[in-house]
Length: 341
Image (cartoon, rainbow, N blue to C red; front, side, top):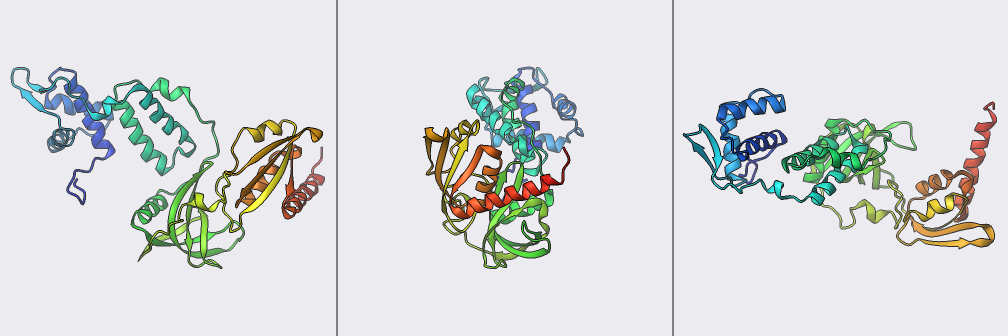
C-alpha cells in the first residue's frame, strides 16, 4: 500500500514477513520461494502468503531496505550478493535494545489498550529483528500490576485521527462532579496517560466558562469528529498548566503556594521524589518532622496526596486546604462510626 507521498506503507504484519525472509536469506541456505512462504505460514500462524504478496515483500526488501537479492539457479533459492548486508534494525547495540525493551515494559500498565498494542508490536519487531533473545531483557525490569482501564478502540482511533488533523470532536460525557450526561465540543490537544488511564486534554467550547478540561476515556460516548478545524495554541501542552506541580492528571486555574509537614516513615517518602519544580524540603528537628514547600495548580491531587499518608502528614498552608483536609477526616470518622470492630 502506498501513502500520500508515494512511499510504501509498512504495517506490522508486512514487517514480520520481511523479517522472516531476511533471516532465511541471511542464513545462507538459499531458501526457495515455496520454503519462504511455508516458513511465514508456520511462524506467524497465518494463511500462506500468495505469490503476489511474496513478490511485494521481496520488492519492499529491495526498494526500502536496499537489499541486493539474487537468485541462484544452482541452489534453487535466494541469496544476498553482499554477505555483510543486514537490516538497519539489526545494527542496534545491546544496551540500545535494553532501553527500548524497558520502554515497552514501562507501558505495561496500559496492557490491553490500543496504544500498548501498537507500540509493543513495533518494539517487539525491532527487538526480534535484532537477532537478540529478548526474554532475559523483558524479565529483568518489571512494572507491578495495577488496575487497568477499559478503553474503547473506536474512541482511541477517532481521537488519534482528530489529534493528527486538529479537528474538533463532539461527544456525551459524565463529569467528575456531575451525574447528568452533557454534550461536549472539544478541541483535542493531547492524550494523557496516567496510572493506567487514558485522558483527553482539550479546550471545551461548551463548558461554563469555556476552557481547557480533562476527559476520562471510558466515559466518552457517541464520539464524532466534526469538519471544523482549529489551530494549536502555544501553551497547548498539559504540563504548562500544572503550575509546576508533578502529581499527575489534574489542572486548576490557580497556582498556589503549599506547605505540608510529614512525620514518621512519611519523612523518607516525601524526600524520595520531586513533587514540584520549585520544591524546598526542610528538616524540623523540634517536631521530628519534614516540611515541604512548593507551588502547584493541582489542589485535588495535593489533598489526596496528604490524605494518602494518614497520620503521617498534615497541611500547614493554605488555610482553606487545612480546612478541606479536616473536613475529609471528619467524614471518614463519620463513616468509621458505622463500622463495627
